[in-house]
Amino acid sequence: MIIDRLGDPAPEPRPPAAGPDTGRAGTAVDLWQLRVDHLAEGDLDLSELDAEERDRFAKPLRAADRLRYGIGHIALRRLLAPRLGVGPAEVAYRREPCPGCGAPHGRPAVDGPPGAPHFSLSHSGDVVLIGIAARPLGVDVETFPLATTVHEVTAALHPAERAEIADAGHAPEAFARIWCRKEAYLKGIGIGVARSLAKDYLGERDPSALPEGWAVRGVPTAGGHAAAVAVEGPMGRVRTSWLPASFVTAARAAGPA
Image (cartoon, rainbow, N blue to C red; front, side):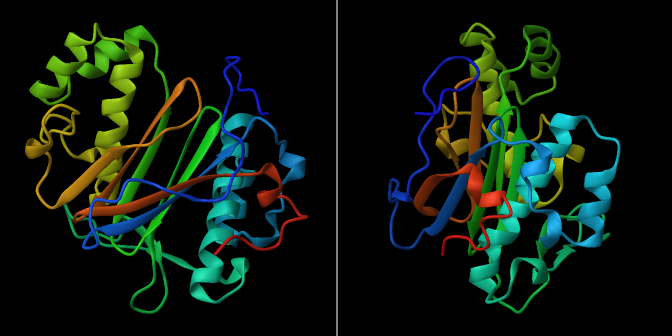
């Protein structure tokens, strides 16, 4: 059994398990998580990254940030490759137009034929989270923040979100759950936190008040973290799985279908 840094049992890597089904008309979502605290930079197979990714990896980031970045981008390529019928190194990306200004710095997307899958990637603390679906989506994972961060950032959120966090005693876990839901949605629409944090309600109490045309759900993850996924349109079956550390090492050359 893998033990996380807080001493709580973390999920064993396992095959995808069917999640709640909200109807056949909903968009199916596949989610994968990886633990980063069982790997070092020297374990990673960087050969499949493109020049831009390798350049980013080589920048003087904090060691933990560099490790999370490498793990996330290697895993993403290995998950997308079989869906595109290419090798991991052949997966190409582009940027969609920003919904705010139209410039090409919106949501990252596969540079491929029509019908290519949509994806989203997030990493924080000991966890990398990747989502893939047939429609636009966003995922987010966050470690529980400090109490000072909770109070500072809560003031910028939607009034109903502020009320939910206050009713929870400004608990870091409650804040993190709502923050992940909001950031997953903002990543899904392709604008990120450039949009006012007070504009949209992404709380947990009132599903009818969520942004029109989007579905949002919390994602079970490792202790000390919160996670969420947002998808355009109704959300159907959600499958989640934990990938083993070997998935991003040189010994692993292909991903699950």
